[in-house]
Amino acid sequence: MRIGIGYDIHPLKKGYRLVLGGVEIPSDRGLVGHSDGDVVLHAIVDAALGALGEGDIGTLFPDNDPRWKGVQSLTFVKTVRSLLKKKKLAVAHVDSTVVAETPKLSPFRMKIRKKISDSLGVPLGSVGFKAKTNEGFGAIGKCRAMACFSVVSLKEIGRKG
Ligand code: MG
Image (cartoon, rainbow, N blue to C red; front, side, top):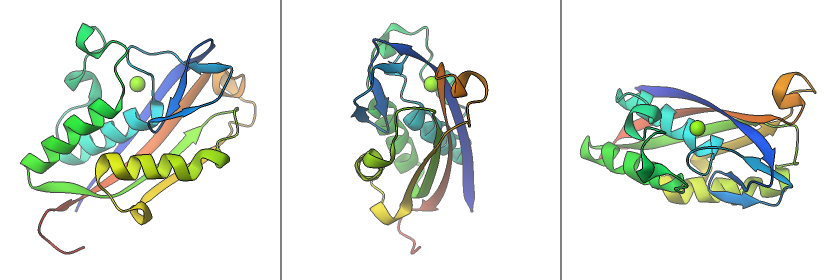
């Protein structure tokens, strides 16, 4: 069994777009990053790469490479999916927890799950997405950052389960 864990955090600032799991969320602040700063997809990509034994997101998509500037993080997911396919592997299950003080993410939960499901080619029932606050503590609690934890398990293509 192959399992990987991923974590990401980005600064949250006024005037930036907020994209989580490939879904744009209406908000007065958004995530600052070399790409679109999508902490959810970044954590998922790192988890998948961990399960694959293939380094990390910073190695594959360096943040000093102009190719990835302003790029949609769905591009990273696509690349990882083809890396998995080459090794005859696919994502079996993915679960993510976003830690964010604001905005309330529960209204977007289904849309985000659907987007993750589509981008990874995983059934909706195998995509978990949860959001919680940091109870006011630290940079996340003060709405200066947003973080995400993800876990990905892989399965061999062509096998049941
Ligand atoms: Mg990141």
